[in-house]
Amino acid sequence: MTGRTKPPFRADHVGSLLRPKKLLDAREQFLGAQTAEDNLGPHNNLDLRQVENECVEHVVSLQEEAGLKTATDGEFRRRSWWLEMIMNWDGFSATRQGASSPFAWKNEQGKQQDFSVLTVTGKIAWKPSPVVEAFNFLKSTTSITPKVTMPAPPVVHCFAGGDPAILGGYYKDMEHFWEDLIAAYRQEVSALVEAGARYIQVDDVTLPFLCDSDYDDVFKSWGSSPQEMLGEYAKRINQVIDAAPDDVTFTMHTCRGNREGFWAAEGGYDPVADALFNQINVDGYFMEYDTPRAGTFEPLRLLPDGKVVVLGVMSSKSPMTEDAEMLKSRVDEAAKFTSLDNLAIGPQCGFASSIMGNPLTEDAQKAKLARLVEVAEDVWGGV
Image 1: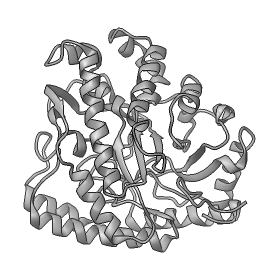
Image 2: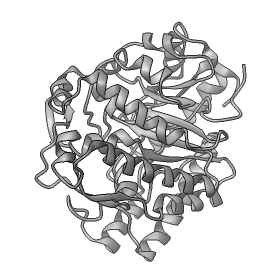
Image 3: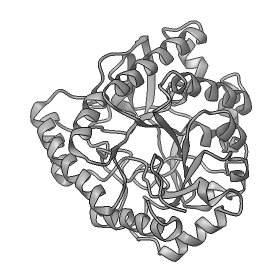
C-alpha cells in the first residue's frame, strides 16, 4: 500500500490554521474592532490584503515543509469558516449580538454562547467571489494541491433558523429558497473550477446536529423529523456537487463544532451513516473522532470501497502532540470496519474556525501536521 495520488491524501487536514499575531493586529488596524456586528464578511482593504498575502505565503510553506500533499490558505482572509462566502452574496445579514440560536457552543460546564444567527433579507443571488480571488492567490504560491473550503448548503438553512424563520422573511415558498441558494452555490463552484480548483471541501455541521438527540425538538419544530431533514440535506448537497466536472474531487467535513476549544453537538454517526456514505456523492470525508462524543468507528462498515474517510483522531483543540503509536492504534481500530485502503488520517477539525483560533501555539500546530505525515508514511507507506 502507498500514498494517494489524488485527494483526500493519507495525511490531510481540514483547512483553517492559526492566524499569526501579525494578521490579527492588521485586521484591528485596518478594519477596526472585530465586533459582533462588523467585518463578518469579505473586505476590500488593500493594506490588509497585502498582510494577508504575506501570511498566506508563510503558512503555505509551513504545510509544504510538514510533508503534506495539499495546502490551504489557512482561511486567513476569513473572520469565520462560513461567513466569507455567504455574506458576499445578496440576500443575507448576520449577527451574534443579542442572537438567540437553538444551537450553542458548549464545554464541560455546559452552554457558553449562542451561535451567530443568519437572516435571509432578500432574494439570494451570487456575486463575484472573494473565495475565488483567495484561491487564485493560493494556487500561485504552492507547488502542491491547493484546496478550497466552503460551508455546505444545509448550513445556510440551519443557521437561518430553518423553514419557519426563512418563510417569515423574504421567501414564501421553500422550494424558491432552495432554488436560489443552489443556483448561487453552483455559480460559486463553477467560478472556482474555472479558476483551476480541483479539490473542494464542503464543511457541514448539520448532520452531526442530527446525531444529537438534544436537538431533535429543534428539527421537529421546523416541521421535519431528523430523518426527513437528513434526506433533504443530502439532496441539496448533491445538487451542488453533481453539477461540477468529473475531475473535481469533493470532500465533506462533518463537524460537531470547533470554536476556541468549544463544541456544539455530540453523538455517534450511526443515525446518518448510510445517507452520509451512500447517498451524498462526495469522494471522501473528514470525520471527527478525537473524543468519545463522536461515538465508535462501527458506522464505517457502511463506507463503500472507492470512498475515503480521513479519520479525525488528532485534536485541533489540544496543544499536546499526539503519540504516534496511539494514532496508529486508532487507525487499526477503524480498519476493523473498513479496508485500510479506504482510510487516511487528520485532525478532527481546523485549528482556527474563527480568527481567534483554538488554544494551542503555532509550533504545536506545525508539530501536529508533521506527526500526521509521519504516521501516514508508517501506516500506508506514503502520504
